[in-house]
Image 1 (cartoon, rainbow, N blue to C red):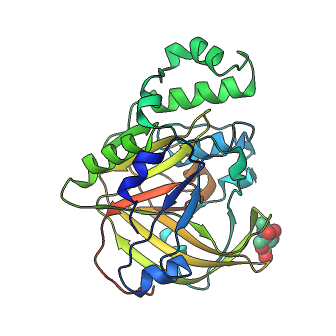
Image 2 (spheres, rainbow, N blue to C red):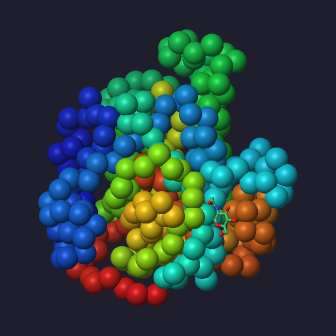
Length: 308
Ligand SMILES: *[C@@H]1O[C@H](CO)[C@@H](O)[C@H](O)[C@H]1NC(C)=O
């Protein structure tokens, strides 16, 4: 599937980033449900949901918060997205957290001209809080500050990162990583059923797709008054999968998974190691992507589904 190029023109009123599927064989149709149906991806939920912050933190690699842990045995359910590569197999059952978000509360994706006209810097925070009418000690102010700090933090070795405040800047970054010669393709988790359950056991039914992705860009939504994506790319090997999941209540999810083969450069305090009780570099770490986060890879040629 490919992000329609002319989308960039009409961004002003966007609540949804609409991704148009281009067909590359039966696989694309399977993913879309119906042929040529646009896949709608809701963007970041509002600043009212504090979990959004946890979310971006845990999938980024530069922050190492312990705040999620009340005790080592009591993990915040929102951290239940990590697993090791050996568990990526048909029939495997695991507890997974998929946040459900109300698109009505989602910050809008701004056009580049508007986003570029507003400073995006933690030393401008007092000005920004006034601009968005948040009081200095509100949870929104804290979330904005955290997002700015996360965006300003140095990448780890072998990582390139960028916070995109518009679709245009996200595409520019993606092109710079994937190369200008290849058309970028975007993937996201798709919920096939509507449900209010956000945390339950799911069983892997099948692998819909395996994308060998030496080059990929993952973009995670961040809590902010307008849509901000924390995009990053790691030099070391990644694998991208699309798997079909069924929940205990019958929910169906076509979920995107990224597996990082080399985690030796990650901080020992990275939340995934605490969840999985492993050390850096000892095992590939995989994680599920929530529906409003994006995975960009160079355009694939027609391929069938693979089995594990
Ligand atoms: C998943 O299943 C296990 C064992 O069957 C159970 O102990 C656990 O509470 C379940 N988790 C969720 C989130 O339902």
